[in-house]
Image (tube, rainbow, N blue to C red; front, side):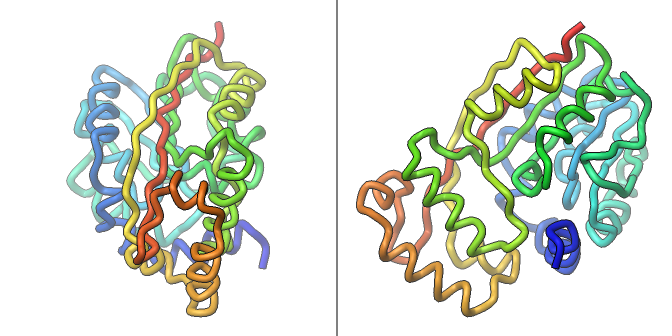
Length: 250
């Protein structure tokens, strides 16, 4: 199955579980997004998933929020939940081809979506095109370590769990891609999240044979990787999440 169809089929069938997921529904980053939305006229939530970023932006006072996603089933969940937020409008489509005018948005955000983008450079170029000059772009996503061994371990783990995974990017990769796309004044901060293994696989519906492969992989990882990711006996682990902020060059 093509990657985009994998994304649609896997996440569409699990849309409700992402709406109630603590990892996605909670976090100080959502409060920061709310604060950032104050006074924003038009905001785009790229790869909105179950819509948590969109809800935070609407609560923060954004006048118009477009929740944009590839999955129709995800958007159906957002549409139902967004009845409480009149500012939210849903749109279906690919992040690599945005159906909006140049400079249309004064804030563009993406949360826990970019690691599924088939062509992140093209998506960021499109994000820059539709962001007005001098306005902000914010990405919130799992960050891969700069150290090659840990990077390899994270990517292998992610794709075993979810076949639609593309890549968790390093901070250095984010900076390079954003600069290429036309963003500047790049800044970032990071925080860690403890991932419960059982919830992590249940949320996406990882098949039994891949769950078995994950257990085998976690057991076989080098000790350095086990320490870095704080892998527990139940295979729960710790990941780093980044808040990456940039400004559209004038």
